[in-house]
View 1 (tube, rainbow, N blue to C red):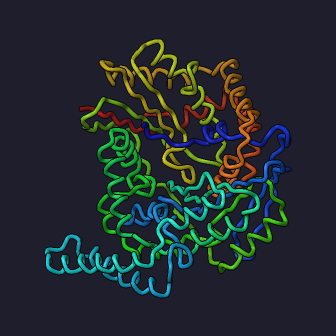
View 2 (view 1 turned 180 degrees about the vertical axis):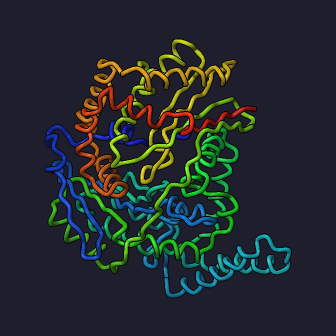
Length: 489
């Protein structure tokens, strides 16, 4: 599967603003409130089917990791369903002391991972196994998952990106308070059970998705080439040496710093009322103390441009080119969304039409304008997988010619109108999905600090004209702002 990243355009064109029967003005549909501890909530009432979708999004992801601790944000995705001091245990008073001893042994063993003291390493390994066996007597495995499913949950999951970590589920409306209390436990009180087991799982995940994956390896090479330093220079799964060195102490410090109410957004969409949601969230989430919101990273990294890199991998060739670009609220973001559509969105897009259907040199073309995240200045990327026998140099030459057109030739009104129609159609299309709307609202509020940008998006796209596309192209699609990575055998 190709390494895909949601750009703002892809996100918005994939989500329904609201069902036609409830009108088009999203701003009138969303209610918002904040708890005394600083946690913000958005509510959209959709009466009808007695269900709702809920999401809690934390403004914490791979970008918030410290150097040498990459992958720690992703670990909380793996910890999400391990439970808390009240869920996943038959007797916390007996389990907790064992988990504390496991932390001591595991953290000490981690510090010795490069040591030549084999005797001490073996001793700690045996002790950790013994303690794990003892803890198993009190752990109720999969309890979070099972109690949620028994109460009608679906779309139950957690995920991590460079920008955020999210916990979500859809349930019957009568289970709103149940949802809130379980999610609150997952977010604020993770027990970090099986941490060292899951650390090994993450290491294997890295080997599968990055080290042994042609797509993952190319994607990571692109990031490390485009950013000299900074948090956007590595993948969310983290570096292997960093992951193998993560400790429970690291996880607790990361959680204490970032998992605070003022750094979270909750969204409920469905057959609920504002007063009901306020009351429930005050009981479930309002009990947690306020804490200062972490500042987060100020930069995505030192940008590197004007370079071309070849990487060797035993797989079919491919090429990725990327240009450094800003993010919202910079208005250039809307021009990049238009360019993404012009170049790669469908059979009539410029690159698909030329490379796949006219020149027959590519089997796949993909563009994104929010890689690897959108909270910070990021990359506009074009990824091409050639047909067998087609040279990368010819593909790059065709790409250069099409990008040159953007810089020198005004986009025709017909092409701009096609993009506008695609965007408008996607907003009008009735996906009828509470979950998609909840996620979109949470993303815009969490990442950009203002969910209203979601509602304003169609009008902002309509304002992008040929002059803006050309101006943005000339400013950012330049050789000294570009990184090219070719995957060759």
